[in-house]
Length: 631
Image (cartoon, rainbow, N blue to C red; front, side):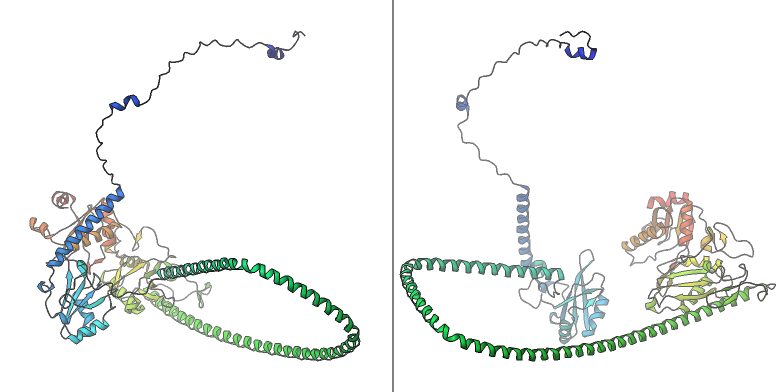
């Protein structure tokens, strides 16, 4: 067959492949002859190898160090026990048989407070609260009474007494009264003392453990019973083998006798059957008559029972209807009482609203110009204010138009100290008058105060006469009312003009004849350094902790309103080196002058430790040259 005339892709199938590539033969390396280790045994040393060092794991090392530490501690305890003598203690004075030991005392409790709490059991001669070497309380004390009977009363009734939030434990002094007694630090002590009930979690765990123990005991008893029964069965099998042959022979004889007796009974039964048939037919007829009579009696009894059940159901249904009617009447009475209570509350709310509107109108009439109209015109529109239809006045003169901007939110009210709406209104007016925040010092700008007592909350709302006075009153946030700082803010629904304080733009002076802006809001810092005059009263009792507390308060309180780089408190050693400095003054180094302005405006009107904060700017160059090295 010729391949001529075939297409190219078909001819490519018959094209021969290229010849394989020629590769040189592989050259194998000569293998190394391996020999045994017998030839090298003579070269090994014949001496005994050294003993192997034991390696100690980290856990073993930790356990060893723990045991060594315990042994050292025991030796130290022995030495302390040998030198312990409570009769030689210079602090242990007084009669030990009249001295009461009080433990588990709060670290905030003082000797004065402790004496006041335990004086109820009798007159106290001496109270000694134990402190450590650093001057911190150890949590226990000794109280010496005048009479021994008072000690016994305190010992019986004082245990578990709650002082400063902790329940104390009392005991007699045992160091000087009990021979051989040792304190707990030397391995002795009274013991755990008063113990409360176990927690719910612990009680549940104990119950589960007891239940598991009971189940284990039951399983053990069951297994022992099974073993005993098995042993008894094995014994029975051994005795049964000997008895089986005798029993088989006896059974065969019994079966033969039974078969013969059955045959005789069957023969006698066939003969007697013919005699019994007439008697059985007569007895069956009598039984049928008796059954028919019983069926009739049963049907009558069932009818009586059904009738009685129907009567009982009808009676229960009537009783249920009466119960439902009584419940419905009770619910109606409760609803009527609720409606009466709500109506009384609504009546009180309406009375308060009437008083508030009357005060508003009096204020409007007093501050209205001579050319203002006394009443609305004939074509004046009306609106419903929630209580009645009143004429719609011009928004420029209507005091209700800007009421949202004149309301203040008052929080953290001290109800428990007896604050009322009238007392709060009076204190707010006096504070605003003393600080020059009132438009008219002789007129109370607080129109109405309402506390949310009915809702069980400690907040309320206050309405001020004008927007300017409202803006100034916002600066009184944190004002102390009966010793408690009260929060004064704007309500959530208020609309305050942005960038305005007291009706005047921040940083600008009021026009002549206009409203006086709040002095704290007009303060502008001239440098990033703020000088606070005598924030801390320094005397002999002032400690390092007092300085630390002031430092933290300045960083937290002032740091919320501006960035602070450093705080310097003038101490006695600073005042001695530089005569011009005054102890208790504080210098704040702010990041910028704007931060200093914000801090002075926010904190300049407040009080610290009952004293008014007095802030002023300080020269930055003088601070960096003289006071910065002291920080």
